[in-house]
Image (cartoon, rainbow, N blue to C red; front, side):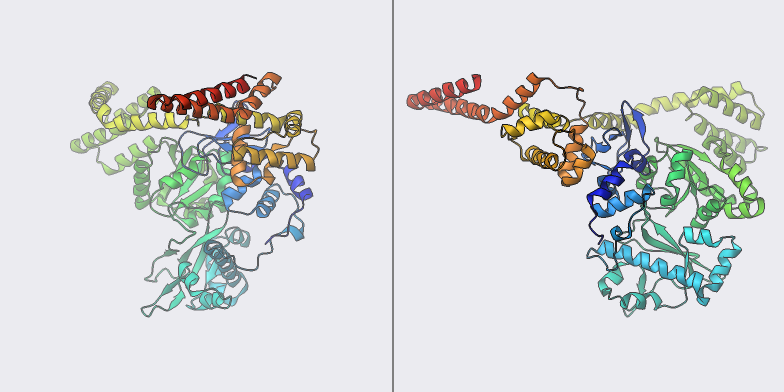
Length: 606
């Protein structure tokens, strides 16, 4: 574990860090009022409810309730301890971390997931060493050099080599006393008919697959022998740490460029991503399967709203691009296509044409409709009347989806030119198609409309608090932000009714004593002494829409509401008992209860 980090270093990291810079690495933030908003990285949503207050250096999700400072964000996002989060934030800001504070974690963690992460990290180091430092890796290194991957690129992606030895990695971990159960769970090994384990990856170039935080969670192994009968690529099976439906290859490296360029390029394979990166196109990712999952789309939606597809230029690649466009219907995104000419794949194009031409190509994005019309044109003989009609029908089904009149007119013109007919004739066919769709639309889209309306309503729902809890929330907010209020409350021996508010108040008084009680509290720093639930609550309180100043009468009202809450409950209880006594005709009890009622009301009125 990491050495205990002193407060001085935490203060230094806090003072030199802007929470917006850190969270922007994970979430696409947009200014709205004085705060910034984006899609919450902790749960799926379509309406942004995740807010960052730059002035207070805190975040809060109005939907799931998570909140805190920059360290809490990293702890939640990357499953780190507080010391690890401090170090991570420091490294993000290029703040030197003294050696004695660095995590010294030579032992495997108790948690299976932590153990698996450590195993994959160690396996990657071993494979890298074999590739770069041993004779066994020479053929694999030659293969990579032939693909124009230099040592810097190899190290950037952590590429290694698994030699043709079915017990090498197995013995490596047995020597480190990893249990049989964990070895089987790891996905690094397969088993024979007798149930004996052996290395899953053999004689393959090893490409690590990382999660969004850069932790190695799986491998993809590529064969060297093109004539071999085995699969060209072998990927890790799903494990406790690897879910292929959630993972995007290279996302950790590409996040910054995706945000800055405003788009992500979706490649067909891992080597395409690496080749593009080598050519200076660094905003590329690849999925683990044939299409993007909802989970992968959600991850991307936090970074960008533009997805550009760059698959191979050969016939299978064009077919795959068309399938992808028909499957990518998520309205959070706009889509584009980067077409590789001459039936080449990205790597072949880069080798033959050079880096600069590929960079220019990556910026030459076709619209989906433009690609699809060209795709239809490839598949139909426009000299044949039957094919002409099929081409027209298919093309108009795509044009009718367009919202822009200018786009519609432009593509109607292209179709008319292709078929050598008038635009008026094409527009009449398009109008007929629109009428047909409008008849079907209400029934087909009713559920979607209802779902959208439900999402809109539920996204704006806020918890309802009674008079007592509203008073507690507002009073605690003012006590945090104005030292004179908390000093007066402390002097009166004031107590909140609900334990969560009292707990934060107690922590506030303790924090103020250790610092200057007469100064305003740094909310972000104060959060470091609270547990997770209280951090969430404090962030929620600090995100309330409150005036700049309080007034004394308001504070007195809150205090009285809280102090009298017990009497109000007592009053309600007496009234209930009075009703029951009247129903049974117990005059004596009614008299006693009435006297109690008068007494409690007198106290309340005073």
